[in-house]
Length: 249
Image (cartoon, rainbow, N blue to C red; front, side, top):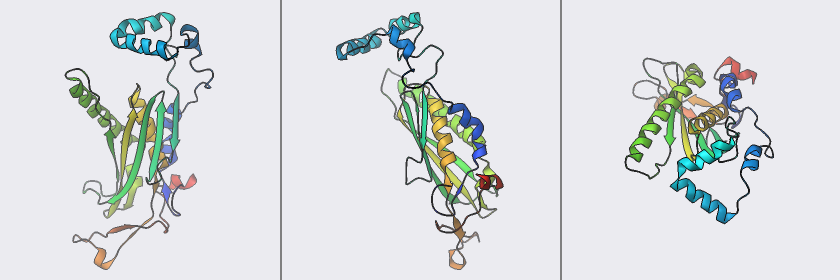
């Protein structure tokens, strides 16, 4: 487990089915884009600037020229996916974090585990809360409204996916007294396609990297007015694993 002594990690087998799907190895760097190299000659700064201008003015013709050669503008074959890469524990101040890249699309994810009161309906279950931070790009009239709808739909998808990645019962500190709320924030650093997959990958790796701090309950004056013990995070005490499966990793 990463983090302070006594910290516990979320069960890894919860993530393996999705993890293997997104972390499948790609081609070596020297092989990536080989198909496009034959169809697209090397460009210097003037040629590259001209191609960029042509793409903006005539986007349809620009892409049709590559389609006729059976490659994408970045040199990939038509059926070849973007190269995927992900790194965990990239933010030292977070309880879990990850950086994911799919091609040029880059997403940074950070998780903060916060002890909170459970809901009355689910006294023994914690929760994962997802938030998406993506700056809106300027563009044509109505473009921002469309982007806001797309971001809202993506946020809902990520929230539903997170609920299936982590067993809510594994986030229970003590039933009816305290549970963990894992707040996962996704920062879109660059969006160049496949944003949904990049966000899912970053969220998956960040959650699997999350180490839950050890906690104890304060007594006496620390109790709330409703009789619920107050949770104090202590990095040096031993915390039980979120589930029996976690102790096997």
